[in-house]
Image (cartoon, rainbow, N blue to C red; front, side):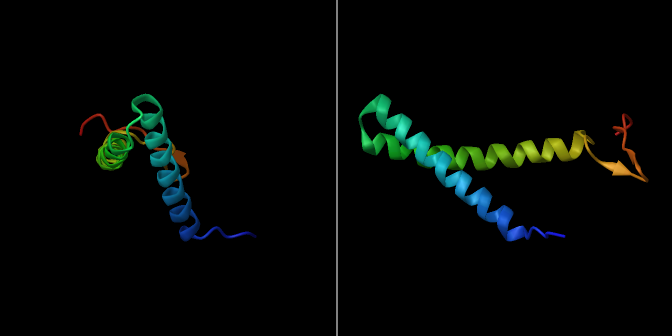
Length: 81
């Protein structure tokens, strides 16, 4: 059996974030032709997306039970919360 270590997922998340930010900077440069402004877009994009991802995770954790099993069956959303 193959075991996938958590460090693989961490490396994948980091490389995805780096490549996505590079793409944002490149697209901003194509449209603005200003490298300083493009780099600023990249910095803002990283900060905003980290916050947005955190909020997205909290909403999913609190309100969604999609794909969560309890006692062998899929858990229903508790409407009384």
